[in-house]
Image (tube, rainbow, N blue to C red):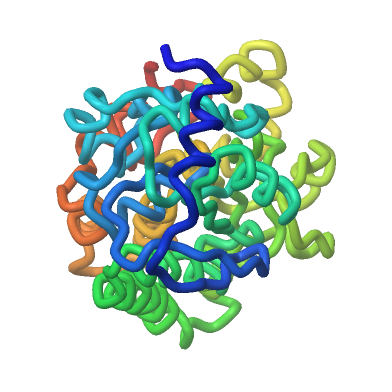
Length: 358
């Protein structure tokens, strides 16, 4: 293995990039990148997902170890054969700092990253490696927001895939517009009260894990019982508050369903007291978070939620087929069945007191 000092010497001797351009990243940094780079790496939660939506996977020269495990992530399932052959550039993970030596060993021309809470961390990595580091961001907890769109367009700008980036941004907004259009005229009196639990936020959690002002439910103009408490962020909600809210329908995220099933054996009376559970009005979603927001799956989940809440308005839009449509456009393959296999079989209603088998 080339030593750390030797790598630094090679980086210093290579000199500055002679031709290139300056881009503004999501941290507000001006980064000088090569004019036509063809060698990329992506580090940090969700960076590779956004890259995979826009730029050729064949131009990746290394990968974090965490990205070798598919675990229902569409972009990994679509590219697993290629990803399995790429050199490892570090373990990856939210708490894992990048390894400059491993990054330099694969000689990327640009590093895309969501790692680092501020510009200083990215400047430090760039100084250590001598490689341009372009910061991306997922912004807040919304499925799609201005930060995600800017990140997608920035990847397109740097990789000369701006046309594809534009297509991705516009298609995602079109799906969101469709969801809103199908539900915007439904009267409040005809809307059931909804709760989404077991959401993953920096790890998997049980039924208490939810989100106020959940963007999927807001796009569907649905009545999220958590919003009645004035909560506007991911939260571990009080069980008593959940009982008092008495939702008509409960959706459980596949990423935390195992925690719910384990908890059920110890607190069966609590679940029996939830009307939605007693009435068999529990429904399974595909995992929405794994190494940052699964944007593709979250969009597909929105169509499933709409199908459950408002079957007439979503007639003709089979949720599994929509998931295939979304994955095919964003990562090149229809992947509903493969993703569902990682999540208890995928979209379904079930009686939680007689739970689905793992």
